Image 1 (tube, rainbow, N blue to C red):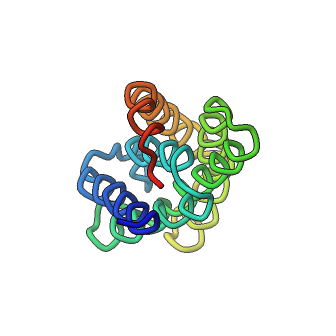
Image 2 (spheres, rainbow, N blue to C red):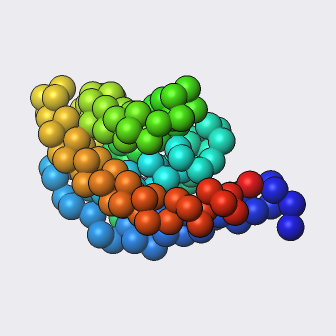
Length: 163
């Protein structure tokens, strides 16, 4: 199997995990926070090229919305953190910066960008910083799970790779 086929198959597994576990969300206002998404975002940033840090969370968000286990807030809540984690990891090659990128990208930037969606698309009046705390908490627990998984399997994955 060639490198791109393996990468696509692994991405499909990440998407399947994200979609199949999407019933494990925590409702907070109009948001359905989903720590498993942030775990997958961290692992995506560590093992995939940068473009996949947008493709994987976008696909999971689309499928979660179609299945009714997500809201429109899943898009800024997942994609920004994953992309920032990917950028920081690719620049530094340090897991801590991927961790920080997911946490800040989702908890701060994603939460603030969720405001116009909540207000103008979903028709809910919320303060601009309403989502910062729940998104940050969800992201924190997700990246902690992702970090634990990474440390447990990094030797196996890094030796064989997700080429």
